[in-house]
Length: 193
Image (tube, rainbow, N blue to C red; front, side):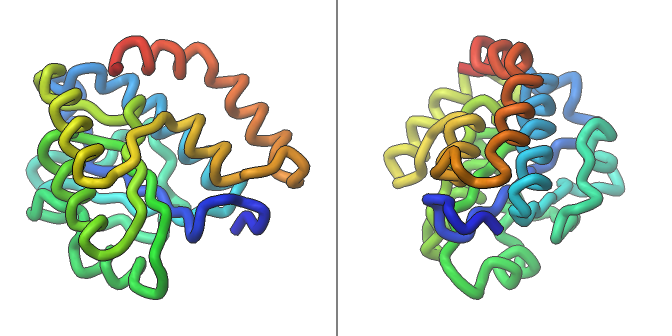
């Protein structure tokens, strides 16, 4: 894990990014693009990733564009919150600085965020990586989560806050990822915010 970083015990959650949601979710492709960038950063910075699917038998696997083979946990759930016993156990050794992307912003992302805040974690909802079927739900969810104590930010901001210092060895690789995803990041920000 990055030693020079400013965030304590960073972790990334990817919530229910499944094929069946591709059509009904507003800006789904932008959420996928942000999650891909985040996954690349987690590999470089050695940040644990936890993934869930919602009722996998009915709604399918995580979309194939997301390379989650390095995830520390990939669990199916029927609860709306990702804070299932397996995730709680994985995060139980210390408070974490958790970034979350996925769907739907007003249901699973909201309930996960509220549960993790209650457990004492610092939660960063990455606004360029969350959405809902109705795009009008997104700003409502983000406003509520901000009021509840979550930090609403962007994927790039969170990644750079994790690093905290341009002198670390991983900086050049991260800068390259950011440069390579500049166009998709811009489109995600324009579409989802």
